[in-house]
Length: 479
Image 1 (cartoon, rainbow, N blue to C red):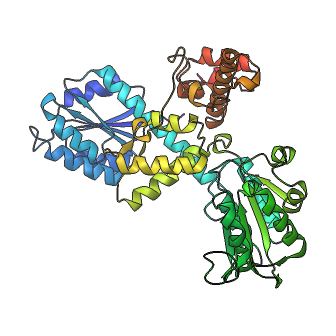
Image 2 (cartoon, rainbow, N blue to C red; image 1 turned 90 degrees about the vertical axis):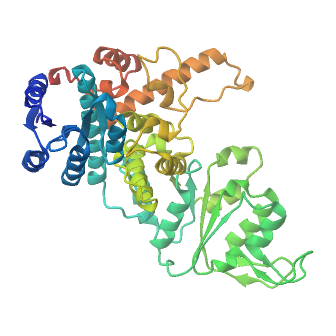
Image 3 (cartoon, rainbow, N blue to C red; image 1 turned 120 degrees about the vertical axis):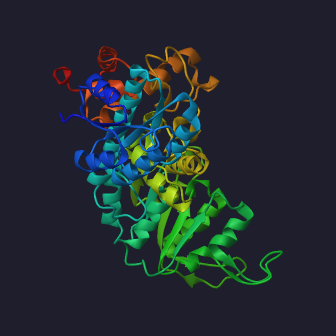
């Protein structure tokens, strides 16, 4: 494995030699001033730079150190620069962080503290490299605005491409925030109907008294307040695609009229007996269990079969390995550009939190989370606190830190007829298992790296893998 390269920049050449000896397991170089550091960095290409604020000709100040920082950041944008500062230079050290430094270590220097900071920087570089690989290896984005590297999402995208050219009615199933409308628009954009209208309507957001007229339109005077004739959404979609979001929330009485339209492709506006023939492709979506609503007589079975010629299941974000950090990086770059903020990335803890969080609100929640973090962060790196994600802790958090955020806990109610304590234990076990599986997936099955990511020892992780029956390779030889 190629050694990490570290460049030490300090006008005290004795300290430089001492640091290079202390970190001899890495490939190191030393420089004593700005011109020498910039020249050496261009050829050496270090991943980590340890830079003293006080460099000649301003060894007692910070101007030369800050200039060196700015030049090195331009030359090595992905490298992590750690500033060395005296006790009286804290303000300048904070300024350095704002200019792009990764962190700072105070003088007189504790080598163990500096080692910890360097190791965290290297860990962050590894995580950023993983995200970069995911983005690089991701297949060409064939569906507009759908970013994914997960195999199950790729299968859903492939299914969209295959059925888009047809007129088959499609039912999109997925939790709230998974992107059902994006899939519906992709079905429209990849179809022969793309030149015509795509008309969405949320069946659960409009009162029952208004939904019929929204869908089918109405004539002037059809009801109180109908001062003019209005064309319904179905007619507006003529020649194009009608997207009925949250179809399972449609009032039962209105389902009969929708079924009749789907059978005959004829609509009658409210207050009119004049039939209008409409040519539309119907795409529906819901986040509910339609079959259970059929059982409880809240949804018509014949309507279900009519809108369900093809079903596309959109996986939840927590079930898409690698996608949370991939999407987080995309949203970071997007909102950083929108708000004019220079943010270099996420801290290691933040990336681990993003990877392990269950994201009950799916992509929509992740997008809002990163947008808020970009707006509110004061530094150039987003940390765990910036994400604003509450983490419930229980048990020995030093041994199992990721388990309590890996999956949502199943609801426990009196109707379950089960012991709540048993259910809680099972829920935690399930969350822990998912966290381990996610860590192994994110590290290519490398147990050593997964253990480091989860914050446990390798023997502990081996024990947990055996306990949960998780398939994993033995990387003992890798050290």
